[in-house]
Image: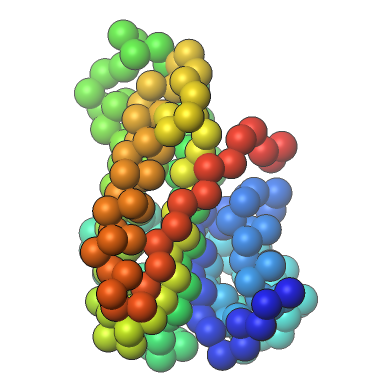
Length: 200
């Protein structure tokens, strides 16, 4: 595996013990990075405890935060810098569903403005807010990696009942492409991963 010793990674959406976020955090830590993880609920502290048992207390930190709220995202970025003095890798994984908040699939015609905005917020607005708050730190050090977890749904395929999710994930791909062009000159790469169905 590649060596990430001395690097600091933020992974969002790490509430589930069986999800992509937790798996990503474990792999980055295994490669040597210090890890900061976040989720919307206090379950994040269970994930932190598990990671610390595997990789050591000094390598892992966490914070519960609603990434659709700008003040909480600002506090998150300040907390990371205070704890680890820098950040090198951002994995925008938060989205699809929030732990403890059941949002069933809906046909487009069934969406209210509230349910539409909720889907856009947790999948796209969260990525915008976190990236906007972390990006200045990457630009300052002239290096960094941003990985956005999108989906095959939206950018590649459509699924009945997933109009808001597909719209947000397709938009995330567009965001990734434009941001990669804007920040490449600053030593920052921006990439998008489009998973299919994950058994979580």
